[in-house]
Length: 291
Image 1 (cartoon, rainbow, N blue to C red):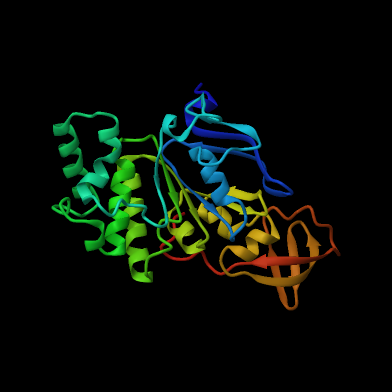
Image 2 (cartoon, rainbow, N blue to C red):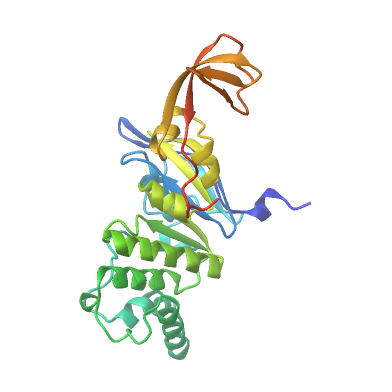
């Protein structure tokens, strides 16, 4: 039988973060599977970006540990961790070309020039920018710059890709277009990916699993269908998608009456007949979202 380590690309165990009197993260436990697209979703200040920065080594946890493929990376500097990262602001070097931006990590690793040139050509094709290597970032649109940032993050063939709200600086049409391309690339390459977003539509359309966070804790982890159709807490029900809240009386055996409606809810057998409850009822799962 395969062990849990075999299935786990990244294990976060009891990670917490304290900023003086403010607790940003409270004992986070999370296992990220090989090859999956995992979205950290939540409102501003919920701790999702802090968690991503701790995984990247850009922030130091107050306690707990992080294992990547069974290797403890908890206290390693960013340069010793195996990941590529894409930021919201692109973070491209404005004074060097697209090709030089993509090659930056490879050159630092002293990869032979011909291999670097071949990799640049391959990545520009992959992100839909063939022939753009000689341009400067200022000559590209925002969406094109983010494609270059993605190519740079993938240049060293990392086993983990981190995306820090990569689409939030783009206009609505470009966001929709690029999120589809990022998902296609992630599936094509099979690279384990963690993306931070506050946009529930982004998470629902891109993720294999979603981690909903609030006030430094994880409210729920599940597939997009789980999160949307079976919210574990009132916060998840309210934050993800649209929700109707119906006052009801339990009839027993998972059945409820709300006005003239009689409803059956799986998993709600714990309520005794006569209990007053609130039922959270969603519209149908949105078309186009990942199941």
